[in-house]
Each structure stands twice: as C-alpha cells, then as structure tokens.
Image 1 (cartoon, protein in one colour):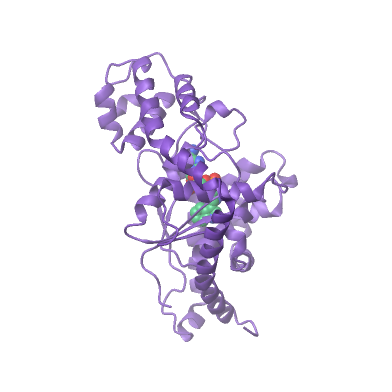
Image 2: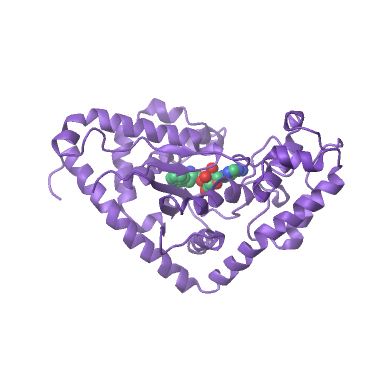
Length: 345
Ligand code: TYM
C-alpha cells in the first residue's frame, strides 16, 4: 500500500449528549469531506472509558453516535463508519506510541489538566495517555486530514510530533523496507469556519460540552423542536442590539456565539448575518435563530430516531465498517511491527 494522499479520519466519543458543538465543529464537516476524500469515521469507545470507567450504556451510546453520523448525511457504504474497540490494532499501536511519545509532551496537554481537575493523582493513566490513542487512531490509517473542533488542536499537534519522531528514529528501517522517506504522514488538522468553538448558551466563556450539568447550556441532537426553541429563547445575551459589524461583537461573547451558530447553520459568514440583523434586538434575532436551528436539526433528529429503532441494523453497519477498517489497519500494524523489529508476524 502506498501513502494515501487524501484520507480523512475523525472520531467522536460515545459519552452521551451529542450537541450542536459536535455537529457544527465536526460532524457537518465530515459530511462535506465525503465528496473529495476517502473518509473513515469512528465512534471512539476506548476513549470513552478513560474518564468514567463504568459507562451506563456504552452499546446504545455507540449506536447513537453512529446514527448521528448517518442521519447527518455520512454514507457508510462509500466511506467507513465503525467503533474503535472492534479493531484491536488501535490498542496495539497506542501501546507502541506510549513508547514513542515523551512524558513532557503529554504533561503539556491542557485537556488532561481540564478533565483531571485538581485531583490529577486520581485520574486514570488512560486519561493521561489518551492523546497517544488518538494519534494511533489517525496514523493507523495514515490519514492525511483530520476535521475537528478547536479543542482538539493540541492533540493533533501531538499526533504530528509522534509521526515525526517515529519517522526520524526509524528513518533507516523505513527506507530499508521500501516505505520511502516518511512512513506516517504529518497529518493536517481541518479546523475552520464560524463554529470551531461553540460556546455554552448559559455562559459565553465556557465551551458547549457533553458533560456540563445544565442541559440548558447546550442543544442536543436528540432535542425536540420545542426544546431547541426554548433553549435559544432562554440563552444568555446582553441588552444591546446587534451591531453593524463583526468587529463590534468583540467583548460580547454570548452575542458572538449566537451569531456564529446562525452563520454556521445558514452557511453564511458572520459578517453577512450581522448585516442582516444590524440594529435588531435579541427578541427578534432569537426566534429567527430558533427557526433556523429547528429547520436544520429536526430532520437529523427524526432520522436518528428511525435508525435507532433498529439496533441490529446499526450493529451490522458498524461490524461491516470494522471489517473494512481492519483491512487497512492490519497492513499498517504488520509494517509497523516489521519496522520496530519484533519477531514473528
Ligand atoms: P469529542 O467526542 O469530545 O468531540 C467530537 C468532536 O466535536 C468537537 N467539539 C466541538 N466543536 C465545536 N464546539 C464545541 N463546543 C465542541 N465540542 C466538541 C471536537 O473538537 C471533536 O472534533 N478526542 C476526540 C475524539 C477522538 C478523535 C480521534 C478525533 C479520538 N480519536 C482521532 C479526531 C481524530 C474527542 O474527545 O472528541
């Protein structure tokens, strides 16, 4: 197998409450990239057990993420949709990357600090080495592009560091086995558009998140039209009208967030949204945003429900995706084992 030149990989954790941030920051981009790239989309269930060991219902949470992918427009026949734990090679490569990555690199990861909180001694070792598993996910398929939200930027830099160190340390063997200059690509993140960091509806300084206790802080992909409208109506804002230009949104985090959400949903720039609503109060902007959000999200919500009504069919899609993922992953692992110099197949 040669180096792929346009392969996309990305993953979403099955930890419940899939929200508008996940959709606008990631899943919607997954859909667009299907036309130009060979795409592999993964429900990262091994990552889901790093924070809370005992998950309430991992199987149904896994199906829910896969259903969200498909309901949003991902084609699991043309591209690959699967769950990580079905392809054992992810764990194997992650172990080897535990030996490539340096302690100092992982100590710098801000997500670990955020997730572990004050009591980092009590965090699992898996939470600490989480970014190595993420690098394994991507590099197992030698993916060239990874669409993600802004919060994953540092993890993707680590992935590039791991690929670079592996390529340098094993330079001679990589050449000896005929893999050219670089074995692993230096993956490009795709972090763009107006919604790379969707903020909480209750607090413009906090990211919209699956784990935030208040459900009013986020729009879930499973929310009804009424819930979506209510959450937008109650979203926190200031009392000023919308300004004439995007620059004037600076320092108004909540207003900036709602404009960004509108722009992303409408496929417009924040500038054009601001021009349409310049001088208008939130009392006018919010119903327009609610209508747009319902129009875009309701069909996804309904299709997710339809798909989840047949769990056996979802499981079949994931098993089929895993078989196809494994075909690629097993070749990489055979080559990586050869490069490391382990005895046996
Ligand atoms: P996860 O499950 O937390 O989030 C899935 C995707 O949603 C994006 N995202 C957001 N984007 C905009 N605004 C927000 N408020 C917001 N919240 C989340 C995330 O950036 C992500 O793209 N570590 C990853 C999962 C992962 C992965 C991978 C991603 C594992 N292996 C390999 C890419 C490639 C994570 O926890 O995502």
